[in-house]
Image (tube, rainbow, N blue to C red):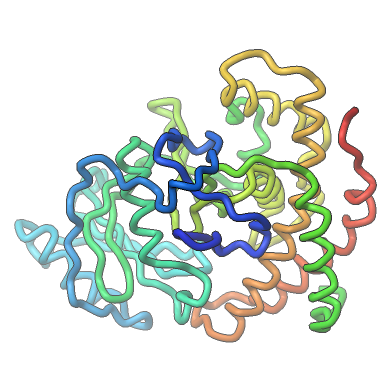
Length: 345
C-alpha cells in the first residue's frame, strides 16, 4: 500500500538517524544493519541477471492492450487469443493484472502499473534493486522486466492473507477533520524526539506488511512477502508496529482487531527466537513490545500523510481522505496510553 530509501534516508519520515548499510551484513529481513563509515551503498545481488526494460507505457485506465503487448515480448510462444487475464483490485497504490494461459496459473505474469504520481512516495529505481536483492536470497518472485510506468513479475502461488488469518498463532512461525499543518508539524517533532530515544535497531524492512502482501502456501507450509516498493532500511519496531496496525484491515478498518498484549508478546517471542536462534528472556520481549507500540504511532502518522498525497493524485477508486482521517484519529486516540508505556528496567 504505502514509502522508503537508497544511499539517502529511507523515505519514511521516521528514519531519524542515518545508518549506512554494510556489505558485511546479511540481508535477511530480520537481520541488523550494522553502520560503517566505509559502506555507502547496499550490495547488489550476486550475479543478478539483467532485467529487460521495455519502452512501453501502459494506460492506467485501459491496462489490457499494454499488458498484452508486454506479454508478446515476455511470452512470444503464447497465442494472443489464448491469453487470459485477471484484475486484482485489493491494491491502493498501483493497478495489477495477471496474464496466463493455463487454468492452474503455474506460468503467470503479473503486470503492475504504477499509480499516478506515486513517484512522489516511492523510489522506483530502488524498488527494482530491492526486488532483485530479495530474489537473490529466495525471498521474492522472478522479476521479468520493467517498462516505462511499471514492472512485470512472477505470480506466487498461495493465498493472500486477510485480517482473520494473521491473528492465528500458527502463522506467526470518520469522526474528525484532517489536523492543521501546525498540529502535524508539532506531532512530527514529538515523534522524532521520543522515538529516537528507544534504540530500536535499524534493519532491512518491508515497510508495508498489510495482509494482502503476505502469501501463504499451505501446500508447502511457508509464507512469502510480496510488493517491495516501500522496502528498505528502517527501524525494526516500525516494521512490526506497522504490521500490527494492519491487523485492522484497509477497506473496512476496525481497530478492535489490533492484537492484544498477550497476542503481541507471543508473536514477538517467536520473532526474537527466529532472529537470535536461541531462547529469549521476558525482558527482551517486553522491551520490543514497548518499542513496537510506540513506533506503531509513527505508522499511523505516516500512512495518514501518504493517504493525503494519494487523495490529491491517485486515480484508484478508494476514499483516501477518509482513510487519512481514520489513521489520524487512531493516532491521537492511542497516543496517551502508548506514551505511558515504559521500557523494562
